[in-house]
Each structure stands twice: as structure tokens, then as C-alpha cells.
Length: 195
Image 1 (cartoon, rainbow, N blue to C red):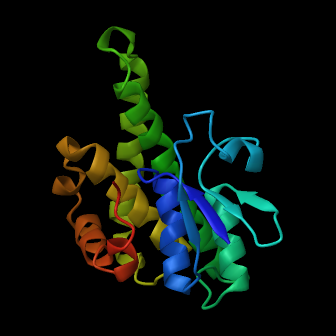
Image 2 (image 1 turned 180 degrees about the vertical axis):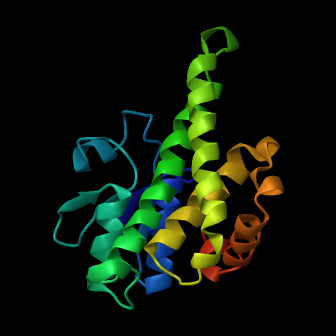
């Protein structure tokens, strides 16, 4: 299978960490999704990373879809099949993905010329990020397992450290920082660092 990914995309990193944890070999194809002259658009009409091209030629896109596909086909399970445990993991994944959903456009906004940046958008993105971080701090002790939710959260936090080190999000969230620092030592996180 071939994974089209962005080296600085937290969504791509989430898929790469899941694949690493499950022992799934992937052919990695780094692309710039912002450049329309790549093969990604022919594979994924949304033209976004990550995109998984399966061996039969069909494409899967969006990190939750790809991660669930990998989890269903290659054990051990990172997403429980049913019950309350499944909902807890999916909710944790939604928090991690939501953190990415605020951090990525915040980053894009900061790349615009100063005169074109929207202070209101930047404030809203930052508020969303802080709200999710505060929730994760309250729930940090509940995150002992390796699962899809924990991976999503860890990749989102790593993205914050990568793109917004000046925020120092962990200073006022010591339990979350401690959890993240420990999780970051996993081989799957070391092997997929942002660049």
C-alpha cells in the first residue's frame, strides 16, 4: 500500500504512527497538497493528505477512515470493536482531531502577510486549542492505554510543539505534558517526527 502524506501534517503523522504501531508496511510518498501539479488529486478528489492507495488501486482518505481501515485489517486493535470502550476512544480521537482542526488553519493564517491576517480568526483558533487542552489536562490520568485516541492526541500535541513552541501549552497543564512526554518516547513517535 502507498501512503501519500505531508511531512508536516499532523493527520498524516497520525496514520503513520498507527501503521508503525500495527506493523503495517507502507510505501511513503511525500507530497505538497498545496501544489496542484501532483498525483494526489488523481487519487483523492479532495486533494488532501493523508491518502492511502490500497493494493487494489482504490483510495481511502481522511485520517479517521484510514486509521480504522488499518486497525480492522491488522491487529492488535487500537479501536475497540464495540461498547463504551469504543466510544471513549472515538471521543478521544475527536478531541485530538479537533485540536488539529484548530491548529492547522491557525498555522495557515500566520503564513499570510500581517496586513491580511484576521486577528479574530487567530483568537478563535487559539481559544479552541486552549479549550481542548484544558479538557485533555482534566482527563490526562484516564489516558493509560495505547489506542487510536491517544495517538491522535499525541500527534496533535506534537504539532503544537512543532508549529507553536511559543505557546508553551504544557506550562499550565502538567499532567498532560507528563503524559505527552512519556508517549513521545514510543518508537512510532520517534520514527515519524515532523520535518
